[in-house]
Image (tube, rainbow, N blue to C red; front, side):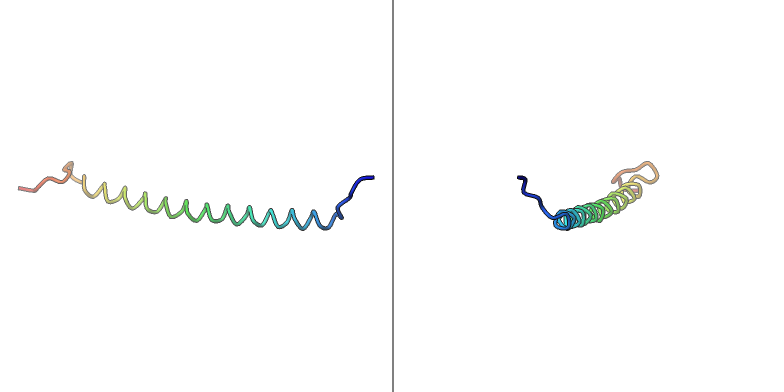
Length: 60
């Protein structure tokens, strides 16, 4: 005879696992957004530095 797990208990574990996966994906999304914002800010700063074709040169 096979030991059968009641259907409701596996559904609960599946739902719990799905919620955990959703939380992890949400956290990854938040971190990815922050990194994208930082990269955008760094790119703007770099563009400001090189504006006019000069990079860290003194204007005479």
